[in-house]
Image (cartoon, rainbow, N blue to C red):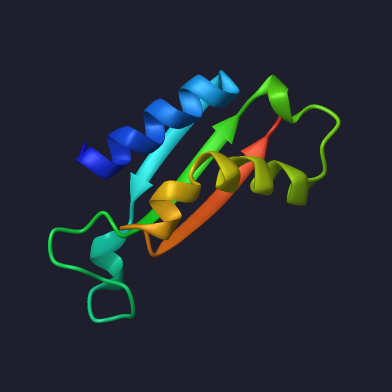
Length: 88
């Protein structure tokens, strides 16, 4: 796991106490597209389940994740796909 992915994982664990968290670097699939940089860690998919999302709409859940990762989004991360759910 790269440095950016590790930071994303640490921040989401601290902020949301997820029961499930997957941070997937999809950068290589975006080679030649906007925002891609050699070395990757520019395009991510995050799957997160947390009780912190209870009572929140899908948009509110995504905003919560984006808020936690605002520094990463303002920096190296070009794109972030978020699937945020309540644990089953």
